[in-house]
Image 1 (cartoon, rainbow, N blue to C red):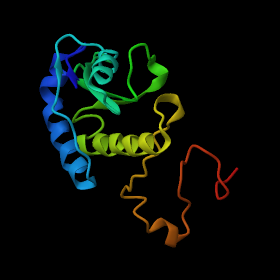
Image 2 (cartoon, rainbow, N blue to C red; image 1 turned 30 degrees about the vertical axis):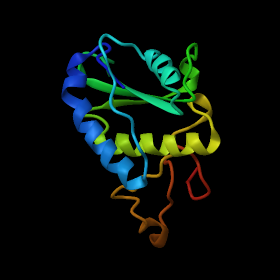
Image 3 (cartoon, rainbow, N blue to C red; image 1 turned 60 degrees about the vertical axis):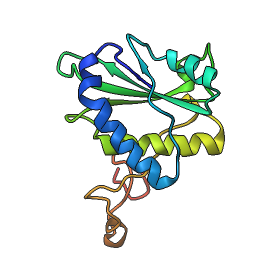
Image 4 (cartoon, one colour; image 1 turned 90 degrees about the vertical axis):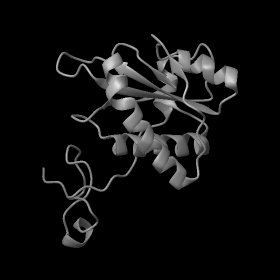
Length: 163
């Protein structure tokens, strides 16, 4: 689903490029996606109602957001497993700041597909399903494990972290 939400500009700039990347990655993994449903002046919870009416296993709404003056074109993705009317935000996962200056379309699609796989496996979404998608970066391309450099979150103390 796509809704303009608080920023039609975000939808105009980023919905189609994101959906193209999502479709490429989803097809590569064997997912089938429904046709895109457009909602004018929609809010996040409308996805639960539409998903329930369609009998969808899960639903994603792309919605225009305005988290601040410096990012008037931020696209948010809200994912819900087993959508139904009355669910609150605790049942949804959010992938935010999808735009050229924020989270890339490919990275957002990767994270969404991870959540979809895990939601199907565990039959949950929201606060009970964390985004733990493993992403390789230039610094963690696998060579770090051979160089003796610690791998992980530098903000958390680990066995190799100095104190």
